[in-house]
Length: 256
Image (tube, rainbow, N blue to C red):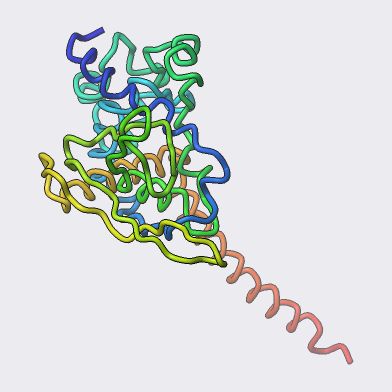
């Protein structure tokens, strides 16, 4: 294992419990923001892949994705080996987390989930799985009442600390008491920045957007090809329908 990866694993460990997302987290709550990006944007996908392998893969695996598949988004095998593989894994191996299932359960109470199809599994009434993840990763705030010191507007009382707090900076959530259905509840209003991060808000949103874009692509790497092929199939069927109709008309024209 490369020495620099140890530090990255420590930061990545904070992902472990947070992405054990329950189905109830996909319904209700605040509206989800629209995730930017497109799975055809290779620059965005490459940036997201770098963020994923640096910060997420320390705890979470992607057992259905091989490193060498990243050639599909423009990386060379040499780039994959030197920039994206942070362990002793080979470029043909699947993206396995360096921590074992037993270690994950001991440290976090649950084994950190595999992220291969995390974006596909989080779609809900409020939007796509990418929308959910994009909003979720931008909704952390300081909360001294939790074990980690962090909470999340989209997923209240989440067990995951804020992985990118250094990049985004410290924030607190502002709530106001309102009466809903005869009961007084605390309603989220906005975030208040306590200290700046190493990134501007625009840069942070871009980083998260690229990461989510990569997670969306990783859930189905052939989706762009599938959609393109689907369009051509529909065009073919439309042309075939016209040809069949004309042939049928010609065949029956002398029959009364």
